[in-house]
Length: 316
Image (tube, rainbow, N blue to C red):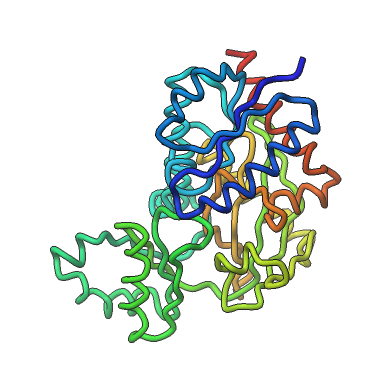
């Protein structure tokens, strides 16, 4: 029997338009598989719309704030509506880059040296005087990013001491907490993990942006980035990356799907940049690209994610 599925998309985050691209594509795939689909923009009527729709499952196609940070997951838990993707805990932890990097360090998962700074550090404690200390401890270049934001929004690379203040201001305009971390020079890769009890790595994607780094425009504009799937790395490095990614997935209690982004440094160490708990499903997104390389069509991928969520509903 086919299910009635609400595809949640849009919302009020800065990734609203990307979410619509993911959501409509997911909805079409579900309809292709014979499901009844209710497409819902996440607005002030969402709870009433969900209650009146009487859906069997919610597919979360949201990106960014409220969609990936545990807010939507908590709402659906209260409504007793099963949903795709990770739990409240995993969503909250995975979305906060500072918190997840602290866990990586505790679990001896390689990640770039970093500090997390709040807006209060600068506004109320004279934190601007720390910049010289940060540079001495981490070294230049330094990557500055909002702690809780997706799609590389607000990320800047400070290559000189003079560039660091503006990079911090830019990142703090997106969030009141920022991560400043050592820039890792090397190959950028991404690996997606499917499953829960027995997580399965998909082929690794090698990312070669034509700009300075893999920013928002590079992610969603055809032709601005070259991709190689599988990545052009050795079998030993492939195995190492897979082991690290599975460990990240398990440590942060991922389920259904995770996408782990890494840089292979010049020291031949794969450094984890972040975990994404609601990967994009657009035409240029990395998860569908990786699945296709594994012989999994887009509609099959969506059906797998729905199937895992429904299995949890049956077990419950």
